[in-house]
Amino acid sequence: MLKQLLVTIVVLVLAVAGYVFLVPGARENLARVGITLPGGETSQQSGGQTAGAPQGRGAGGQGGQGAPGGQRGGGARTITVATKPVTSSIINNKLSAIGDGSALHSVTVTSQSGGTLNELLVSPGDVVKAGDIIGHLDSQAEQIAFDKASLAAKNAEDALKRSTELQKSNSVSAAALTTAQLANDQAALDFRNAKLALDRRSIVAPIGGTVGLMQVTPGNYLSSNAAVTTIEDDSQLLVTFWVPERFAPLIKPGMAIEASATALPGQTFTGSVNAIDNRVDPASRTLQVQALIPNDQKLMRAGMSFAVTLDFPGEQFASVDPLAIQWSAAGPYVWKLAEGKVGKGMVQIVQRNSDGILVTGDVKEGEEVVTEGVLQLSDGSAVRVLGQGGGQQGQGNGQQGQGQGQGAQGQGQTQGNTHKGGGQQPAATQQ
Image 1: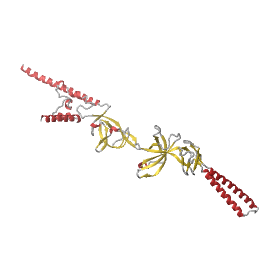
Image 2: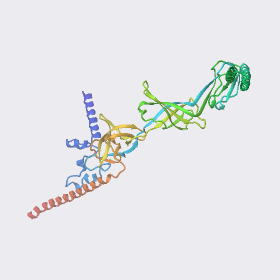
Image 3: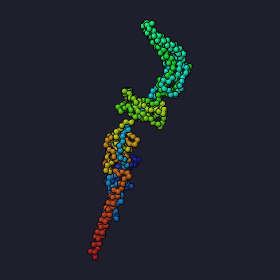
Image 4: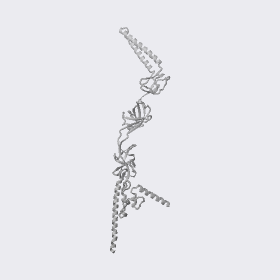
């Protein structure tokens, strides 16, 4: 029984302590019901003693110096807060994506006919021009066929010339001249065919660029269309990346981009959008985009991964300090300061940045919002901004209280003198 009684007393003491600590004006409320707590004075006690107190002084003359932060001696509690102005900022309408780099032109060099590879005239890393010969196949048979076709073509041409001269003197019939003409044309075609076969024994670079690794070595037999090496024109790099479909109407050819390669930290490359796909991928809801980046210094290579960034025009929004945002069941809000009091302004968060939060709603640029001391606030709370002179008002009230105390002192002295005079008058009568 005694234990339960002690527990009950402890709970009541803790409840009263919490009430006094958390509720402004708690001591005054308890004093009204006859409960006086040690360690502090109520506003009535601090407002000055009654007239006729010793020396006519009350606590009110001293209490005019105010509660900390310039509170009134017996008025409502003033809360000290810190504020920051609302600024404006542009929404970070920036797109970041990961892309893969590829050469502007890339070709796999192949053998146009089968045969033994006699020699290679280039090495990996060499820069070649379009039409340069990079290797030869065994071409003895083709060379012989070419020589035969060349002789046959020359004989047919000579025969046609003789027939033409004889036709002028009517020594050759028109039919014989036509036959000579056909034989010459056939020999010319055979010559061209033999030359083509001989030319195909040479492996030629179809484009200009940098030679890659060789897939074959001299002495190997190559079948028709066998891969020999690759040539890539990396004077410019194509970076292919995917963007969400909501950016599809915003991306246009020629837009500037910035790209950074994982293999080249600290370096940023600029380029422009080169091509945009004509449809959005229905599975991923993304749009494929290609950007072209100059590679004059040959620092970038095909196959590298790039972080691509595109900037889009953004809208202006109000920006508040992250500490100003508070939450309630109705959503986010801020405490706005006006004429020494605070009020709640409901907002909607648009974007979070490291230096501020962009919002819309009941807040405007230039307004002051509370960033510190928000836990004690309610609508209409009187506040003092930290760092501003708020003690002047309390001192003025203190002087007023001191004046009242002095008035009470004078009144007490007057009453004392009156009483003293009244005490002497009967003595004179007795005499």
